[in-house]
Image (cartoon, rainbow over all chains, first blue to last red; front, side):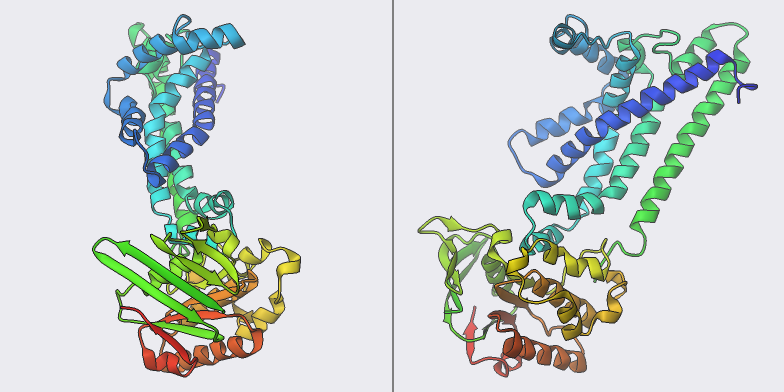
Length: 233
Length: 207
């Protein structure tokens, strides 16, 4: 691998994996909570929550990046607060790239998880309750394990999406080598340079391989946990 | 009184009204399909809140709209055997049986795991997934799971429906044994009056 890739290319791959992994791991519980809320609860403002979650899927990524700049920029309401109280800066940092990736991946993750939660028969939750389970226990022992395939699928889909994230990242976190220059940004930068064709090709191949691997893993996870015991009667 | 159910509930256009007071070991509720029999069981189990009424089982008030009493299902301790069994598909038979048992305090248990397994003849099924069981087996496991949760009463929803005559007869004998040996009050729902006449003298009609 090191013989094939230059050190800077390798660092791009490592950074991309780090950004995507952090984005997915941090987003996972939030996405699941949102998915559960949208699948199981009727509350005022539900349509608004649904629309907000899906916003990054429908607006141009550069607009999402701009919104992140407004909100999480150093003078933005959330960014300013984070800076003041925790000394955390997100813009122009790899953590900012992770935030951009997370926001862009969120709708895909919520959709996959929501479908799997909706597929869990509420009657099974009722059965758990009648057997003595409090709501929280019934959730942990019935809804959560039965929706696990959706969690896995959502995570992998989110990971693949994060790896490919470009527009919101370059807008919000910028294109800084070694800090926010993930695979798509490095490919884009390579295209601007004369004589970098081979580098662009290598990074593109890695992009394709990683994304397809994530999709295949997600598919296998779903199949393995779905299997023959997914339905009773 | 084993069961005292007084309820008034409206679902859409349909109105379900029932007044029932029984001291029999088994109380049967019969009526045509769509009369709301399962709804009544759900109300007794605490899975549905009736508009108005009072539900008392074995002296414990489970629901009383006038006194604003409405115990959550997990505190009613109903052994609810659903018509569609509702075994947990991600758990093997053994874990299904243990589900309610684990949630029950030791001093509340009145029947042991091995006893239930032997009583129902399901020892050979313990390592199986629910999806691989036959209809009769599924129902026996569901009864076992309910018994192991140390219920104060049993709710059986059409326990004999859609079983072939031999299996239906076997399950009928099982319910008779539960009635005679385990001494736990049973509220049983059926669409077939002749089916329950043999089990009990108290038959209430709905719809």
